[in-house]
Length: 125
Length: 141
Image 1 (cartoon, rainbow over the protein chains, first blue to last red):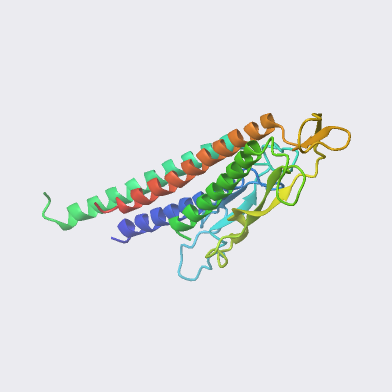
Image 2: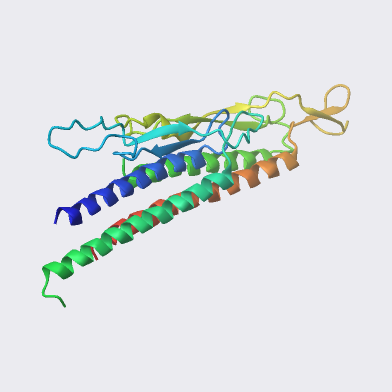
């Protein structure tokens, strides 16, 4: 039972992350021609990353949970125009599209999870 | 933050690009205007864009990453006017030269194309937000 709902919780966190990331990427597109603007991105730090200690006994202390997403200034393209703007339209659009696909995937998985629960809670038809 | 924030960010970009388009169109329309308000030939206008924060994101830890855009100023180009010899022109000076605006139509066309492409990109990011919201509404159907 908990497994069913924790899957949905994880997927919900993924949906939130992709939604917030879209807002940040939309800001990059809006600032396509703003002098001195550098593109921003949101990086997700998955809680309970492999390097943290496992909590397998009631007495164990969980490692501190960091922020769920952190911002990063993305200069990897180095496509700076003379006015100091470093937004690459193609890269940002590719990111937006990939982000939307990931969002759609998570949304679909939540739907399927709910369908499964409905099936189990119903009379099996 | 919700999808409306993303749409607000995209909308700020769209309206900035539309202003740019209007300014470029006005420059083109006045490429031959020898008498503008305040006397002298029309002066080329240019928009000044600046990134701004978005209302409703102040309390998120990544507020500084969410940036809309706004037109902070419409500046005047200080390039000197182009002088053309035309003694019969009513606006000609004592030497017979007429001062025409410092506008290069090719430059304005390039500006319009850039603004129009940026506008299209803004539309894409706006419709992506709508598409994602529709996906979310589809959960549980």
